[in-house]
Image (cartoon, rainbow, N blue to C red; front, side, top):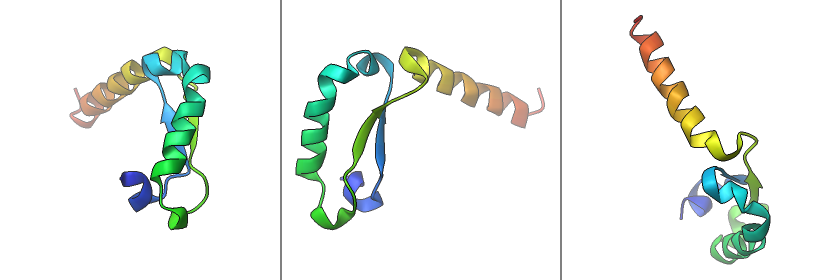
Length: 73
């Protein structure tokens, strides 16, 4: 599990799942706590993205824009 390998502090949740974050957060936290190694550090916290439902679209658009800028188009 990458959580144990990389010792993340937060799991950022976006897209459609973020719309139901309050409902899903307790189960996500329970699963994260059950599957992380105790020595992996502090408690990993699931957090809703500030970008809301369109986080993935914004990210994809940003990558496309950066790709165009890198090619000087």
